Image 1 (tube, helix red, strand yellow):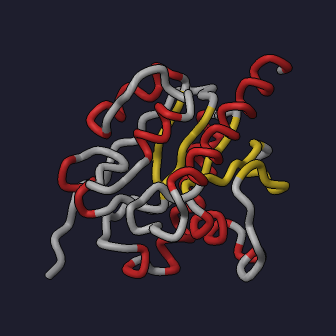
Image 2 (cartoon, rainbow, N blue to C red):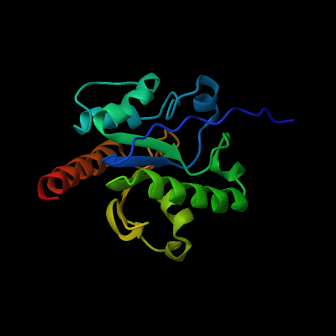
Length: 180
């Protein structure tokens, strides 16, 4: 029998600049109770090195993301060793829950951590090339930004390419916040 883990807590405030969305928590994240806590996960390093947060932070400080204007959640709440363990119905339920969160909290931008997550939300894009950055699609009218999945399992995407995408989000936010 597989061990069940409690879901990770969402950290988000109404009107957040960005709602970061992961696919689902990994086992380590669920075990320690923090987002993007895998040993080889680069999310927190990318946040700092891109300038999205002013100082280095770790997964243990995920609760502080709203202090910088960010929120964090997952499409699927259930922890698993990998996305292959997830069932199609979990994606469907997760999509409905994510849309409800977007309507409730009204972030300025939704940032998806990975192309796989994007394709789960927009199945008509399966098989098509997806570029990191701002997308034509929106969720509940909110601009959608695709970032590389920062997991260490995403070994085919070089760190510098990830950093470039996170910096592009930072530039987009600067233009967005100065013109809106």
